[in-house]
Length: 110
Image (cartoon, rainbow, N blue to C red; front, top):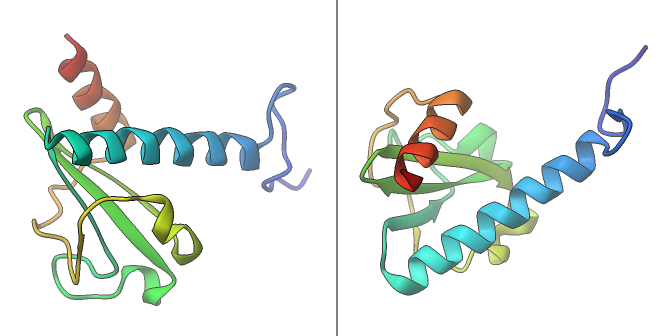
């Protein structure tokens, strides 16, 4: 069985879940930026100056009291994120993974 964006868990396809995540991420980061609550920004280059995945995507980053969180998106979604833009990410990547992001958001809600 081939697994692709149309693969479903019986309720949603991977494509649908990816779009949900992106929309929630954009809404949250846009609100944070508007409120000046956390340092959020977007960039087409990582902190090292390397283009994000050969220049095909950009990264959105937020620095929370609990640590960094970030995601990458296709360049066609750049304008969806109404947050400050920089040539490169402001901080070096701290090695966070998806579970770290979940934990950092959970701690933020505690």
